[in-house]
Length: 296
Image 1 (cartoon, helix red, strand yellow):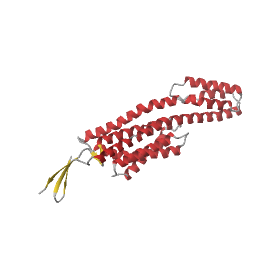
Image 2 (cartoon, rainbow, N blue to C red):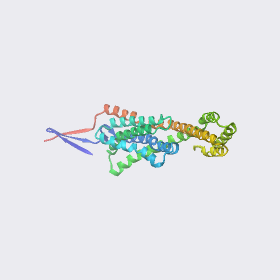
Image 3 (spheres, one colour):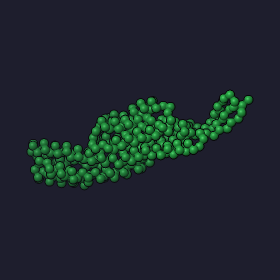
Image 4 (cartoon, rainbow, N blue to C red):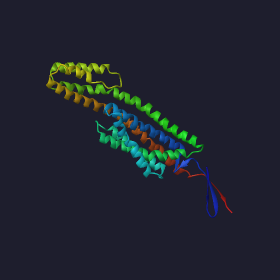
């Protein structure tokens, strides 16, 4: 694309070198890929946490996750027309803050989750639109430009899945072993007869050994088997114990998401050195190549 600027003495002709607001197309696509990799934490991991661990129904989980697009829409409208370098960096920081806030959750806290997801959406609203506009400001047909930008985003999603999935599965598989001491302490500290404690402990251990990897053991059958042999008072103690064990396992599993979510935040923060390098290079060279010719 060639642009002509006319003043009273001469015409300046300059060529678009693939930069928008000081940001090159390749840099914008790299930043989009990194943000997309970090987005895996805010979507894939959070949905698993809400539905499979916190036991929200899909509709409820969708309502919680809707904080992301709502925040994205609100922030994107307020941030239009700003520098992609500034907004890209600010968005990456805010997205990383939101992901880190989710990672630090010690147990089920829907209010905290909503606030963290709102931060994630705000980060996307700051960074994604302006970086996408910069990435689309390239040579070639609109279809080719859009294809390159979509490919960058998809590449980021794939990289995020390849890095985060094995990390998440490994940490999830380690949960039962970490929970065993607390579970055993809760069982043997409960006010139920010793024979029931032993039977319940043996049943829970068998359930744990028969549970496939990367899945949570179902505590229901062992408790149901022991409950049939318990008195009314003992059943009340068993119900309280079941709640304690469910809470213990839920908290342990919630914390098992921590490392994967922090890696997601790291992906987002990697946008900062990419943009900083672009800024440093921009300051060392002219803004664009120009060719002047004197007008009549």
